[in-house]
Image (tube, rainbow, N blue to C red):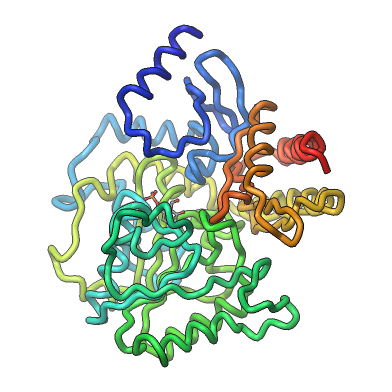
Length: 431
Ligand SMILES: Cc1ncc(COP(=O)(O)O)c(C=O)c1O
């Protein structure tokens, strides 16, 4: 078995483009709930879950069952051409979860495609071309999505020219406020800065959409202040600019609500959902109001695989569990306990610059003196945890933020063990 693993590793190196930034070289045989098992029989606690995809862990029986049943009936027909039960039923289920202003859907495959589609929709219905995105935001790898991405310049290097008329505003990243403010002294200077763009750089009437992650993912797991999100909502409304929320990473219960926007008491004009929605299968959704969607004429947008029957069947089975009364309250409770434990640990280690998160989307920012990002230490903590059979990912523009993305149904005792191992990791790295 060992020999076979080594051979497969060589095959990967020989035949695959090296551009994937693989976090590990593990060779996985199977997954079960919170765990991954390698071909050599090692068991890892997986706090990555396919990058926030497997909301109920690996191979949840209800999801497996729904997918298998669907495979026996219809694997692919193309929702572009015909209708089938699982896609139609998923729309009914989603509609139960979204507000009136998000009552129509377009099904696609990936997060990037949902962002691309939402930008196309915004241009189509407003007749405007400009977009305001946010510094540190991540929206995917296709050219349109890369054009609005700025979480690291490596995602943009050598790919120019990008879509024209894209402007980047500062994200409300309070731990590193670009305007030197604290939570107490904050007067939303970052939003004022965005508004100034309309005076100096581009007229508001040329902007189709503001594209915002209601909790920033790849850019560092940053939770914005509620007053910012609400003020952004009002600003867009006043200027006839569509507000797009990219909930590809935050959606489907990750933050303790079905959608992160619910924490802020506002709804976007267009919502992008991806990652977790398909229960592990590729599925993404664009949602907006019927009024707006009805203007998107037949053939103006389309897809071969979007709304795949198996992905939709898995999505329905998964939503049934996540939507059960009390499930999301438990997610919030587990997240809060975990954050409290990490915050307690932070009092012992100055390298833990910030502990932040919401629901089960949590992170620790690792720093040197004066909050300088410490990506080396973050990498060595990640390595230590992997040696202890716990998988985590880093994020943030400097890769100094360790993020924890457990399955939503994880047992709290496992998270407590993670905190203990994290403590050891910091100790072994020197205080
Ligand atoms: C917020 C956000 N938007 C879009 C994407 C792109 O999704 P995908 O990789 O499925 O294209 C990601 C992926 O990490 C993301 O986190």
